[in-house]
Amino acid sequence: MPATTLYVARHGQTAFNKQQRFQGSTDLPLDEEGCAQAELLAQRLPAGITRIIASPLLRARQTAGYVAKTHGLKVVLMEDFRERDYGVFEGLNRQELETQYAEIWRRKIAQQWDDAPPGGETMRETFQRVQVGLQLLATQQPGETVLLVAHGFVARAVRAILTQQAEADFFTTPMLGNAEFETYSIIGTHLSR
Image (cartoon, rainbow, N blue to C red; front, top):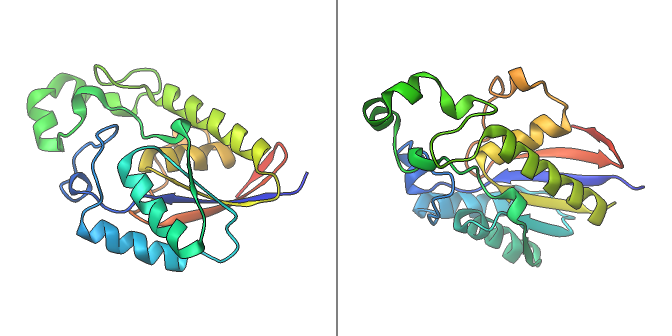
């Protein structure tokens, strides 16, 4: 089976990113800087992309749209790559969380594999959803060069899956910045960076 080249990009900046608020499933558009970042991403990505896949959330769709326009491609949405839902943490910054949800914030609940903020997804649930999406992508696009436009947690999950990173090391590597990307090669069931 021919290798699939996978570029994984994080969406451009939104108001919540700038304000350092939990965004998760909150569906915000790119801000002015985020639009400029998405345009620059479209220019920085190598030629030869054959497919663009994006999270259905607006910020990812908008970012993918800039790339699609530059590269002459359509955007395919995949629900598996939507951002993690942070439940009651959505829209709040660290100071607000320390005040409103002090007990669960101290437990680092957003960084627990099998626990989550009330109303949110666990890390494991999101991780497993992303893994299903990657398996579909690998089987449906063998030999292609695919751009996936997603989110910070999703990009970390992709990295962990494709590099077989230990659960304990999930937060040891930095999150992708807005409109940054990483490159992977998927060969059948052998996954490498």
